[in-house]
Amino acid sequence: MSIQAHVNQVKEHIAAAALAAGRSPEEITLCAATKVQSDDAIREAIAAGVPVCGENRVQELTAHLSADAYRGAQVHFIGHLQTNKVKQVVGRVALIHSVDSEHLLRAIDGQAAKLGITQDILLEVNIAGEASKGGCTPEQARELAALSQALEHVRLCGLMAIPPISQAPGANRPFFAKMRQLFVDIKEKMGDNQSDMICLSMGMSEDYPDAIAEGATLVRVGTAIFGPRPPLHRA
Ligand SMILES: *Cc1c(COP(=O)(O)O)cnc(C)c1O
Image (cartoon, rainbow, N blue to C red; front, side, top):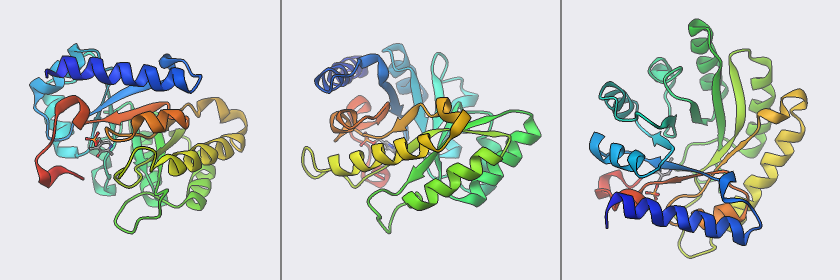
């Protein structure tokens, strides 16, 4: 099947999951997870109607930006971000999904200040408490949310999570439900900035319908659009 056909199929599944949950399909943004994909595959996905590309690695982001491969779509950074690489990301992407420490949050704010911009960010929460994964605890997310309000050059727009690889349909729903609750809790404490909290980024190829059922506003889909990646790049 072509990328176009895959994108159509994913969009149909998104719409069906939204309607089943009593939500409007327009509430959910499809983000194509483009790691290891070529410039041309990315262009094909955008031509097929993908509005957002999510990149994991700074090196790939830089290469695709130089090739103008994302033309017509927004670009988000969804991978682990090292503090020493914030310069290559801040101001170049519309949203950074993976902020999970005070150190990184302050580095992003500092770089955005230098550029004279406000960088939109999400906090990544390790919602299943997996030792092998990035992301902060729910408690740290509350603290980082409070800190972000004190910083002038970052705008907190929501939360992101990568739960365990889904073993069965429905297996990750409790994690998605927890994320939704945390999102609501943090939003309520944001005072005047509540209206900035618009993004709950969760759900991948194996489980995005469940994430939508639990309130996701953005799903990050790779395999279901581009086909399987080489095993090395699974994570
Ligand atoms: C690779 C990746 C995805 C998409 O994974 P698939 O299972 O291929 O849909 C989503 N989010 C992040 C952060 C990723 O690295």
